[in-house]
Length: 120
Image (cartoon, rainbow, N blue to C red):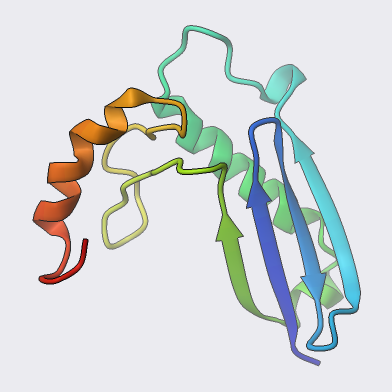
């Protein structure tokens, strides 16, 4: 059976749902950003990418192996307009710019410089 994994990263945690082509739910998992998993206030946003990576793998590990082995496609979304620029191997090249961070306007030129022609 072909299954599809959707992952949602929010402000307070992350969630996943595995469905089939008919929309039947086969697994749901949650990962909460609190307690020992939280990034203490005042620490660099650069640590957020590591926290998100932990959440991603934490969600996937919660999916039963027999279901996980049938996943054929994955879709991931994040909070509002949060941006994390990555290299071609998927490694972050700078700290994330959160949806409520005014620095987003400052990276627009950098994004335009690396985007293919005719892509905003």
